Image (cartoon, rainbow, N blue to C red):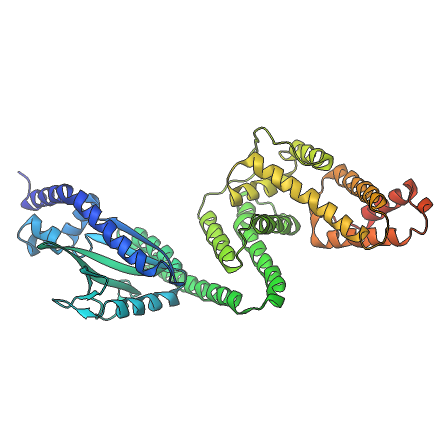
Length: 450
């Protein structure tokens, strides 16, 4: 014979199952209500919802002694404060208070039993006047507001939380490791101390990111290029820490990957800019979020890269260079890592991404050469011939070893300088000859930092 508490749990779960479709429908109404209120608020990012799962309801009945507190399963469903859970998500910890203050302004009409309602809906009510943020059992604060939805003669209760990215991330870890971990753990105090230390560090990161984000809105157009350069350096550092530090930990190999990482960052910024996705601060924040998600993954290194059929590339240089990289990408560790990181960052079709990346490199070289040649007043036909031959010499040099370090900003500046000096030495058409091109390639090989 089972204890009464287990029969009570079974009956309560049956009640939840019978009402679930209605509860799900109401949760969508509440979610849409808050979305419509905050969709144009600059502090707001998203709203998420959930209806209590059967497993979670079981745990709560036992943990909170609902069997003793409530006479019937119907009362449990009626009184459970977080039967429906909603979370308003924002970027930074500071934004949580801003959103709460906005809720206080909106829910200004007094209802019954300590609840307040808004002019937009009498059915959705909040206990908005209770002290916020609330202190949790773990000692940290959270914006957690009791709410209810009036459906004819029945109230469905919900809990509304306001959380920044940092608090969402930390709260999920804390919930899994400490709050719902009922096993005896010898080192629990140590783990708890480590968790609190992690929370402190996350709050520091939150502050730093908020400073960076706000700085984007304060700068003028003249400062934008300098700021973009600073952000590229920051993203390069993050990519290095996420990928290369883990690569070292997994393989024991220390690899100087700074120049290839700068190439990767230049590529993803250029791709976003030319595809019209580059919206300064928004792009930066989205990229940071993407890196944060990647950092949680179990990354592997040195995997064999397989590409599908490649689209035809634009121009002979792209075809030649692309075939060369494809032939060594599973032999040369740096090129393997470069492509693996790009595929991880950008997602999508690998073959298409490979073609885009190759074309970016080739067009960057052509642009640098063309910029220097066009400083001089020569005929259009002659200029194109010189540009084509100089680019040919550059790729003849590159394709000897396919050194990934060649594509650094310093080497691109060197390339422009050498082209300019070659052009300055042309005093007559006779000066444009094979000897001039060989001299150019010899200097490039000697002076390039690879």
